[in-house]
Image 1: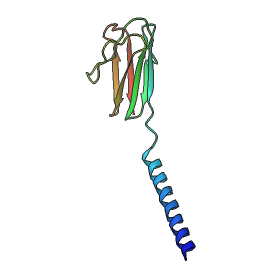
Image 2 (image 1 turned 90 degrees about the vertical axis):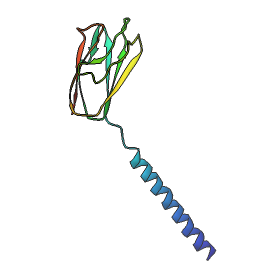
Image 3 (image 1 turned 120 degrees about the vertical axis):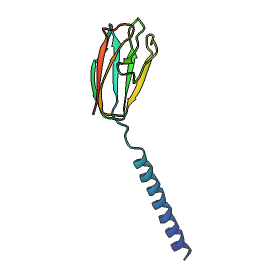
Image 4 (image 1 turned 45 degrees about the vertical axis):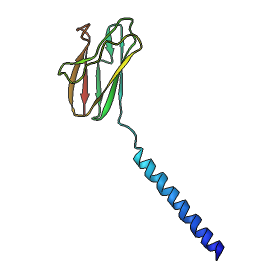
Length: 114
């Protein structure tokens, strides 16, 4: 009787652990795809990116000069980024978003959010 009760408790505990692990795994779903844009040689590379809604884009300055990332629509605006600094923004809504460097206006790019 004690052995039966022990096995029943052990089986129940094992099932509880499995349920917790499965629930935890489902709660830790993979994050949406993101994108990296490198600023180098006074260019955004790539200068056109397509992502899914809810994804984050990170711009990293690898130039020797400061740069900014500014949305034409006023949705986001980084401060001046020095070498090896970065700026990130999460795009929640589908659409096409144009950006530029406010210091060097010929530097332009586009984010398409599906």
